[in-house]
Length: 232
Length: 232
DNA sequence: ACTCTTTCAATTTTCGAAAATATATATATC
DNA sequence: GATATATATATTTTCGAAAATTGAAAGAGT
Image 1: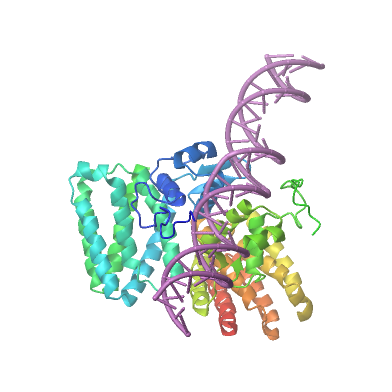
Image 2 (image 1 turned 120 degrees about the vertical axis):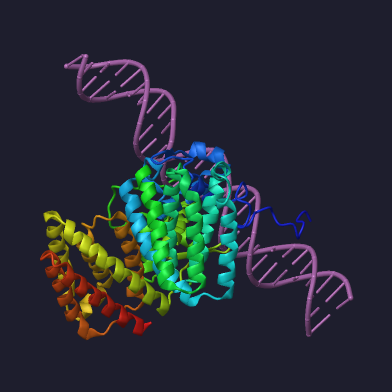
C-alpha cells in the first residue's frame, strides 16, 4: 500500500544534463579525460566514495571498466591509477584514429540517409556557436566545446555500417580527447581556422565526396595532434 | 554441494595452483569463448556464483569488463547476456584483424630481437605437436590447440612497438577466437595444410621478409575465416 | 472476454562491513 | 649505525544482506 505506482525514482537517463545527473562511470571518465585527476594519480576508494557519493562496489565496477578502456591501470594489490600519458602514445593514437576515422567516414558517406545528414547539420551548428565565441569565453566553456566537438565527429560517422569500425574508432577518439585536455592551453590564432575546417569537412561529407572529406579530416586531425604533441 | 557458504573460505593466494586457481575474469571469458555459455544466454548471478564460487560483486566486476571487451552485453535492469554472433560480424572482425595483424607483424619484424625469435620457435613447436596429432585426438584437445594457436600468433607480433596496435589487434583476435569455437567442427583434410601455413609464416618472419610474411598471414587468416563463415 | 490494477516472486543493483594485503612506524638485535 | 623483526596504520579486495527493479500471475471492474 505504500508502493505509489507511477512515480519512477529520479534515475536520470543518459540524456540528462552533464553537470550533475550522470552515472558514476561517465562522471569518472569525464574527470579523468578533463584532467581533474592527472595522469599517474592514485585513485583511492576513500576519496572517490565521498566525491561521487556511491558505494565501493559500484566504484570498483566503473574503475575496472575504465581499465579496459585504457584510461586507468590496475596493479594487483596496489589499486587503481590514472593511466600515464606520453608523446609517443599520442602519436600512435593519432595514427590509428586517422586510419579508422577515414574508413568510417567513407562507410558513412556510402550508407548515410536523410536523418544522418540532418543530425550532422544540427550538431555542427551547436559546435559553431561555441567556436565563434571570443577567446576568453570559449576557454571557460572548454569542456562544453569538447563535448560538442565529440558529438560533431561522431555524427559524421554515425551512419557507418561497421559496428566494430565504429567501436574501435570511438575508443581511439576518447583517448585523443584526453590529450586534448592535457594540452588544453592552445595558441589563440587557430580557433577560427578550426571553425573553417569543420565546415569544410561537413560540406564535403554532405556532398558525398569521400575522397575530399577523407583528405580534409586527415589534415584536420593530424594538424590538431601535431600542435598537441609540441605542447606535451 | 560440499562447500559451506557461511564461513569465509581460505582464499587461495594468487600464487596458488594455476590449474583451477585462475581468476574469475579469465575463467568467465574462457567459458564464453569456448561456447560453454552460448550466444544470447542470460548470465544469472545465482548460477554464476555457484559455478565459480565467488561473490556477486566480484562477478559483476568481471562481467562489466567483458562488456567493454565485447563478449557480453548489459541491458540496464535486465542483467548480462552473452553477446550474439553473426556472419556479418565475423566478416568485419576478420577484415579488421587482418589489417591490424599485418601492420603489427611488420612492426615486430623491424623491432624483434633474439629473445623474440627464440620464443616464436618455441611456441611454434608446441603448436606443431598438437597439429601433427591424429584427427580424433586433436579434436578432443581442441581448447588446448586454441590456446597454443593464440600463443603462436601473439609471439609473432610480441615485439611490435606500438602499444595500441598490439592492444587493438588482441581485441580482434579474442573475438575471432570465439568464432573459432562456435564453428568448431571443421573438415578433416585441412589440418595438415594449416600446419604448413604456420611454418611458412614463421619462416618468413624469422627471415625478416615482411612482405612475404604479410602476404602469407593475410591468406592464412582469410582462408580460415572464410571456412568458418560457411559453417555459421 | 478484455483491460487495468494489485500482488507476489525472481533478479538485479547497491552498499558497507569484514578479511586480506600492502605500507609505514617503532622496537629490538647485532 | 644498520639490518632485521614486530607492531600499527592505511588501503584494497571480497562478500552477502538489503534495497530497488522487473516480469508474471491473480484479482477487480467494465
